[in-house]
Image (cartoon, rainbow, N blue to C red):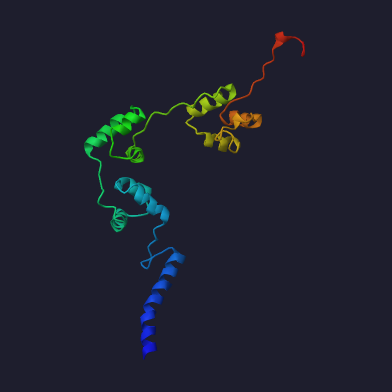
Length: 203
């Protein structure tokens, strides 16, 4: 009878462990809902004060599920919704004010929260041209990318130049094959001009 009693006590524990292994293998809980990943939990921690951003960052989770997860994680006490006055101030400053002035206007909110909230509401900051690097052909290509609203990563993909533009490969050496491919990808042409007044080569 004692052995039977012990076996009866162990059975629920074993069943629980089997359920845990099964959920880990399938990525689903007992209700057939997708388990929360560590990456998702990091999003909840980072934006626990911003339910709108949480809904945007976790589109496959319902607002109810997100709110429940915040409750379980003990993150509901710090909820601070944006007031209409704050949203109005954000709209006014985000497109024109220097970064320091912008973030100083919201001292109780992390910079990332300010930036994400503005982007969620469709506010945009003016684009800055690429910095001049002092190499004419590279600067010309970068200006063209700015006009086309392309990143250096976009250019690498279009020109098949691996990481040359993205990682500022011109600082090591100019790769003329990549430069030529980039010019062609940006609807440009390479033109050769001979200096006719220089005389014979070597003179």
